[in-house]
Image (tube, rainbow, N blue to C red; front, side, top):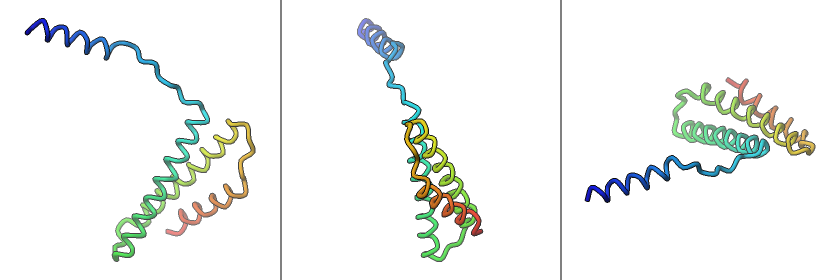
Length: 109
């Protein structure tokens, strides 16, 4: 029985210690993932605020609204970087519109 435990331990140790090949993300992937992550989180916060307001609660609305806007602005920067890294021209009109929207949300409180 103890031989079984030792062998099991050695097998487990081999899998833990052995180097695993990891797939490195390209800079484009990093910026796009950051863009999606931040924009999704910002949208989630805004939806939560909307739900809270419909329920009559104004608790922490301004601070959460500013956090959402901050994330949205950072997402835009990541999107611009992703286009630059990818070697293509970003859709600046759409990005400027988004930028103004997030700045407006940030400054409303």
